[in-house]
Length: 447
Length: 162
Image (cartoon, rainbow over all chains, first blue to last red):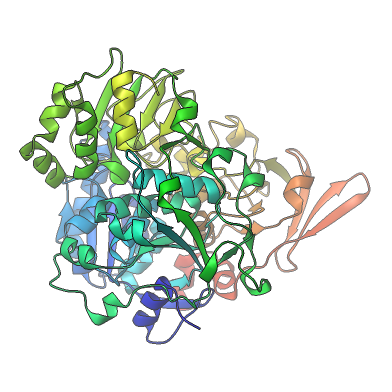
């Protein structure tokens, strides 16, 4: 029997073949700690009695959720982080460079085949370059810092194959939202989501990042895209090693099987009962959901969609929601704050004006993106159109700064979560969409 | 025996503890805001030994370990749900809060019911009109049970058990 991409990465690291369900202790290549949790990681690290970080060069500390501080208490986290970094010799500290997940890949901390853990749940993002990466709590992070290892249950893999050309105006965001709607918010719990097919190969690393980022919204432990020449270029590698080039799912690997293929997006919102049913891998002989154990989609079938309040798996086509008036639009986050996202929004907004009474907030994901978007004129176009351009960081996505909403307001946002109360009061309606859709909404003043 | 506090499917960690309280200095202070958006009186009503019961995908969303930590700080004996989101599940076990998968019990109880939980036997019970109804619970993998038996990851590592 073959191996899935994630099984290959873990097998390479532990030196023997592993399969979904095995519990193994893995060496860790890189860890990421963000500002919200650093005081707690530091406390637990000391409580555990460790005297040094196993390899300070492999640990990265990033301030993003709280930058710049909006409340006095936030500053405590920077002080705690700075003190910890100094005491234990951590050189990789980013204090105002952008969002953690953007920086981890952009700054070259993550390479294909690596095993990474981060204190933020969207650490699944690094699957975009063919790494196994997942979120952990602060106690586990402290244990990794001390030991350089972590125990994992090798995830079973759900393979998603997408082939064909996406219609105009349809993006990676629409694909991942559609998949989350089909699987449900817990449809991939404890599993790896392995993406393959021509449409996926055609995606930029930025587009893959969007999809890997949101894998956790279907409950996934990690996402994985096979490294290719685009990955190598993005990671500034001359070429992939044989081991890195071998990170792909084998056709005869043991994938999770489903009792039916993807249903049309028009059924979205049918609730738990309308979703794909997972079958017990061991108990099922035949595959119904597609040959070779994959969930298959045709690129041509995707349409622009939104996740409706307040469930990330309540997916509906934008056409069904058209006309709803909105108060604000947010374009940014580790999901969709990259240069190509800002460029896509600028293309829609070029020469136009944001509708009266609508606030368009644009938050580049990193300082690097911010500068590129200045240099190529993207920010100029957005500003001309009436956008409020903020500092790079998490911004509104985590509901701490820059555009908090109040009762009865409706926002179209490009980030990854629309949970109750995430961007203000529990009576705020959050619709998640692609940057293209969000920009169109900003122009119109309605969905 | 403890009282049941029942919640629904896909309960995310923002509902257990909203992000604005994550920056409070101690878990004890945070715990006063547990379930604030769903049941503001919860911290005052829950007693040590009570149970939180959920549906599918309990604890989805962010990685915040404060979510299981505030429940433990309030004395919640265990969270019993049909299924758990991955990070919540690991975090709970790592801090020594039993997160127990039980498919049958959640639909059979309401807030205010009395229930029992026998971790060793893997049985949850609730008292109805016809006496105690018992539901099987999924047992933890041995590695996780070992962490839980130690009272969490810190004691587990201290013990050299890893």
